[in-house]
Amino acid sequence: MYCLLVLGFLGFLQLHKLVLYRSPLAADLLDIYQEARLQDSTYAAAKAEYIAAQEILTQSEALMMTDATFEIKSDWNRIDFDCTRSFQKDYGSHQAGVVITQPLLRTESDLAIEIAKSRVSKSDVQLAWVEQDLMLRTAYAYFDVLLKRANLGAIRSQKVAVAEQLEEAKRNFLVGTATITCLLYTSPSPRDRTRS
Image (tube, one colour):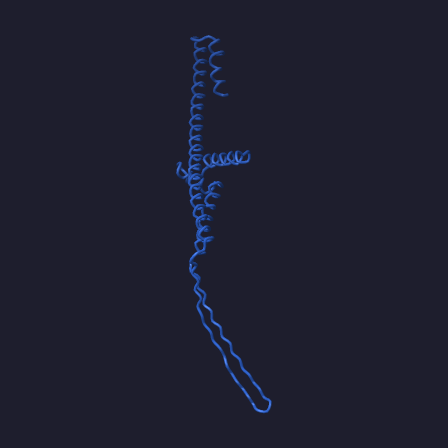
């Protein structure tokens, strides 16, 4: 369980990296999702399992198909016999045949086909689940980065506003409309809060 959590966290970090440092061509959530489909190991494993299950089904169905074998055989013999009389005999045989086998009842093949079909449906559901999970992880990472960018922009704006407020407090002190207490104790505290 701990290993799965660590792998999930590493996948989450990889998605964050993908969203933060995406290529210039990936401009929206759909493009980032397409890139994540290419790079996510969980999705690749589920897709490979799905393809393997379909291949196992094809192989299981092949056990019930007609099997045809074509055979050709040719023999040639020559007999030379020379005792008192000369005797020579040549003969040969040629054979050709086709053997067609159609299984009528193979319960183990029927069972293998049913198992393969259930495996295909299981891997289909698993692939759909992994694809939806990837969509959610990509969306969470995408919107998390957008939220952090918005928060960073707000903090920068707040920092500029506090700096302007401090400058205004300094000007007011120089003009004489504010006291030193306003300048020293009120203005730096918002500036310190925005820095933290």
